[in-house]
Each structure stands twice: as C-alpha cells, then as structure tokens.
Image (cartoon, rainbow, N blue to C red; front, side):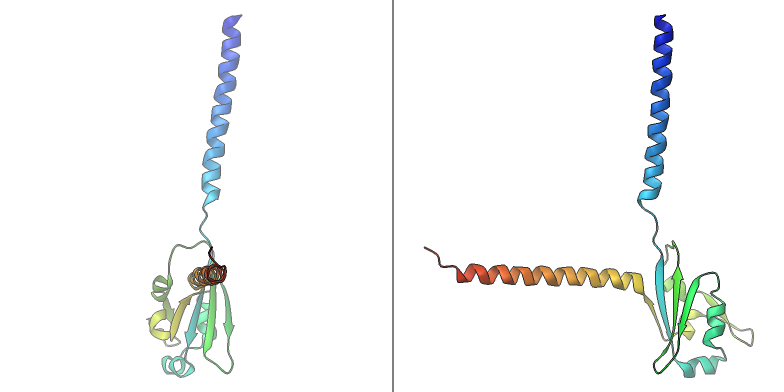
Length: 150
C-alpha cells in the first residue's frame, strides 16, 4: 500500500519535473528572438547607368526579402527588410549583384551608401534618452539654485 502511494507521487513528481523543464526550455527559446532588420541602400543614377544595371534589377535579386524602391528627385533608394537576421551592413554589402552583362559585383561597390536603419533607430533612442536626462538635470539644477538656503 505504501509502495503504491510512493510510486504514484514519484510518477507525479517526474511529470511535473519534465513539464517544468519543458516550459523552461520553451521560455528561453522565445525570450530572446532575433529581430528583423531594415537596411537602406542609396544609389546614384549615373553610377547605375555606368554599371548598366537598374534599380529594379537589383531589387529583383533580393526577391527572397521584402523590398521597396523609391525614385524621385533625390537619390535612388532601396529598402530591404530582412527577418530574423544576425548580420550587419558590412555583410549586406558583400552580397553579389549580377549586371545585365552577367558580371557579378558586390552591392557595396554599386551602392552610394548602406545604412542599418534598425541600428540607427536604436542609436537615436539612446541619444534622445541622454538628452532628456541632461535636460532633467539642468531643470533640477535650476530649481536647486532658486531655493534659498537658510
């Protein structure tokens, strides 16, 4: 009788331990997921003409990612959204782009500038936070100077 009760509680504890470990592993996997990144690639129209490649051709070579092109009065722009990646703008610059003549060139050789918009947004947030803290310190410093000391 006691043996049955012990085996029942032992089985129950093992099931809870397995469940706990499973939840712990699952939680750690979902806790820190890699975030998607957005890259901005700027091109000069004259340089693209000299390489004999169009912005649409470059965009089509990144068809596995979500892309948007912008043309107009300013520089030609290509936005590339890459989900869950672990690389930076230097790695993106190493991507090979094929011209109409079949020549393969690195994106960084064709592009005027490459920007990691996700990193830039984080840096902007850090600067804004630091600026707000400095304003708060100045504001607190002015209040302290105004109050008379006995």
